[in-house]
Length: 564
Image 1 (cartoon, rainbow, N blue to C red):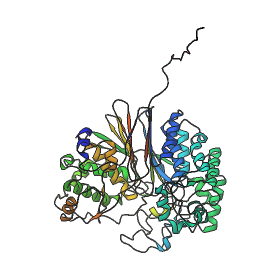
Image 2 (image 1 turned 90 degrees about the vertical axis):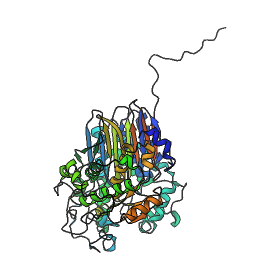
Image 3 (image 1 turned 30 degrees about the vertical axis):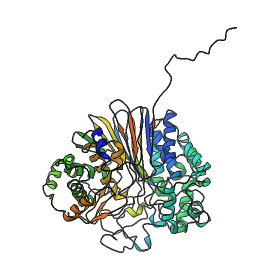
Image 4 (image 1 turned 120 degrees about the vertical axis):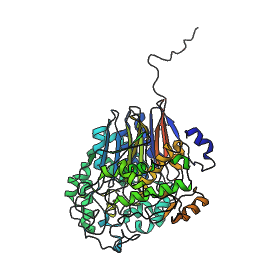
């Protein structure tokens, strides 16, 4: 179905809440308007997509501090102007002092499998893993960008020093975490002025953090790995019983990885490899769905949702062996992404009933992340997902710096003896899905989103929306989503009651939810050289497109000569 046909009938299915942006000389889409403005300003100043993405990420550490920070980690998928794809793994690692039995678990089964006594792997110093974000951003900028670190940091420094208007979304996040934030003096002073959550519309000034960003502008990542920021962090760890040491900081290195590639109905789908599960399982699910006429089933139909649900459950059944750090666990990528393997799984799928596919316990992951998608006029594309893991990470800040600690240790299996158990130096696993899709070797889509375990399933559904259902980009990112890992089937508003009843009759345990995953943002590339950017209603996402250009050479304004 062409996009025009979808637009003609979409009002009867769901209505988009936001509008897309278009441009011909660049596009920046982030989950905050000020971060999009920071990135687009860099493009207008002559920078490339990598420069703009890094500038947007630093700005997000100011305006989306509950989601992303220099003490976090993430994954960046770069398509360079020469056609090369690079995945930069800046995920956090377990400290050298960590051990498999460092937590006391409370259950060996879902839904409490991931929980520990005192929430030790979720809140506080033992939840903090070795940060990778700052080193990865600086290395990526140095290798693939064109501008100096100090220049791309200018927008973020200005936002921190001058302040910005708090959004209702930030206020809601502070409210949700109020009790934990109140326990940390620095975070309480910053986000709970007078003991109440920062009010929407109030100006939030972060002077200490502005000074931290200035230090990074002068010293680069060395400010953290072997400088004053690292000294402050290690001192805090020693004071509160944390495990991250100076040696952990100096030894951390990002890893550049080859992406996972697959095909779906003539499109090439390219995503991040393990320890991200997204590339493997998006390809796996699309391979499985390729054997069905998804378009004929129709968006939001009982058959269509049933197929999505069974594909998700099959992916989660295999995920336990395909998500770990490949330096520690052998990951069968080729097997899981093979068309033949999808055919084997497909043969067991029953359209009339939901099935319980065999799986090891699947671990929980935070949905509180952010995503940036950027394209420039040179042909570079960046899709990058970054996080401090949970809302406000481990919910403590490094005194005097404004830096908020991640709680990435929560992503490890707290039980010893498992494939995803804590091991010193091991990278955390993730569902991050910065995905780029090609047609005939040229980019047609780039997208990603936050959402924890729901990320790669949501990204897969967006691709199905675009390729099978012929949706325009805005509809594809805003369309109602579904999600399951085998226990319950979550349905967003927009999936009809009749469809929900049909799914229940097939054996699905249907649960209506307000939202599945987080705010997706995406870019579509058109044959005429233009781009469309879109962000969905699930976050403060804003696309900014750049068009126009410089004056035609040789054209000058000639002032009129007054005659006497």
